[in-house]
Image 1: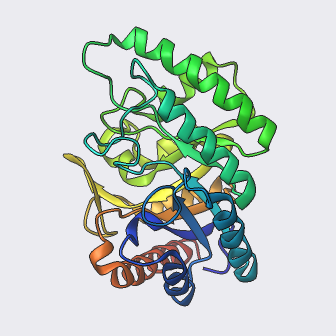
Image 2: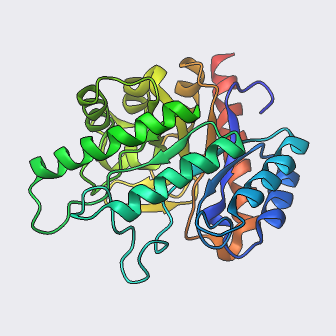
Length: 286
């Protein structure tokens, strides 16, 4: 896709059976030019004593390839071996999540990342939505300040089933925080199938110039389950066309975190699907 203004990448959470260097080698051979790097096991533990050195080494490898990178923070059991994605920013004690996100910003600066992507988390049991929103605003405000100082923007991702579920929710949160320059949006194309009332085109257009990061996967309207492209109801051609219309110049990275068992095959099929959708749109325009 040499005429695309955005960059195609792939998420490391879909290559968890590969060492990071091997994953990059495979993706480079398939034509990807960017990495959505999920912090945590097995690739880059942000709390490891050598994390900064590892990040610097990865940056040198990416420089050699001419790649860009975004930081993803959706590791499932990094902070609690018993509870997925906990604690989150809505819990009574969110200090461990905040420490993790601050480390993500630090490592993002070393890696020269386009952004650090993050989300709200699900509403904890016994916490009212209003109280959860208050917690989220206070905690996110401090992270935005650090991101601004570090020169690494944050990209807030709406997630089905979480407190901040839609692009409209994320935009309202940003407004509540005073519309800081250091806070943009992540949009997952598959999520749009599940929760966005105006679909993927409407969600991308609503994000507009605030779009900092795009995750690429398919879904069915009935479930938040990441599927290979073509196995759900996402209109991929329309999504890519909209990114082009918006002059989006960031990373659009495939995110298939449950497909590591066939990572090279899935990545190859994903690239073919993306190229076919792009060519289909070009032919339609012609």
